[in-house]
Image (tube, rainbow, N blue to C red):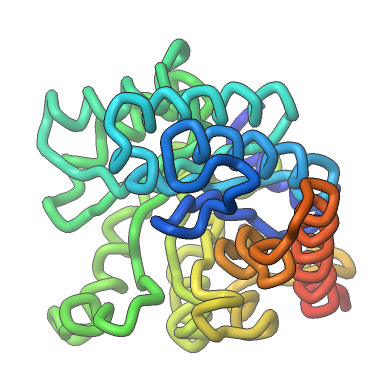
Length: 292
């Protein structure tokens, strides 16, 4: 099945929440062994179990595993295997971007049929040019995967470059316009494309504009929860399909992975209850905004 079709099916079953698996330094509870490769792995596997049946999509941030060296990457590989066994759609947040054969190497690591870090889609940086995206798009076409391109991100400094005017329009709009052929190439039977766009929940007007420019592209929306954006703003670039807004996923990491109740838990049962509650609450909040 095409990546876009898998993602939409997951959101239709569970809702638009994407659970971020970002093991920040110093945040892994002692219940799992603390901030060590072993602790990160145990925490990640427990998060997979907590996410299963509550959401259909997860998003690991590779940097938090890379910082632990090869042991951290081994932990990531095992977490990805568990996610695949659980039937979760995996969006790998690695923000790769480079020329030619280097980009092919990145694509092989995450998007190939037998990739060592098997992911359903990979975040990529477009600022070296459209040609640097081609190896990722080719790999996605060949293996039913997706490519997630940075467009209008949620960080405070995103406007430093992304909003600079280029021939009468912001740079991020020009980038999305240039992606139109790739968006078409990765379309699935659902009509949605596996060429996703990152558009931050902190910029709802920009998200609506990007939807005008790319009506068939799925959105990955960071900035909800800990970064301050609410559910309505997070889904401002989604469109009505039937009785529900559709068109992508909304990512939450710290608010669902490290809620205060989980951080202070004195037992695994308390931790599981806290994480389940945080995921359920975020999913319910987004569904209120999505349902019409």
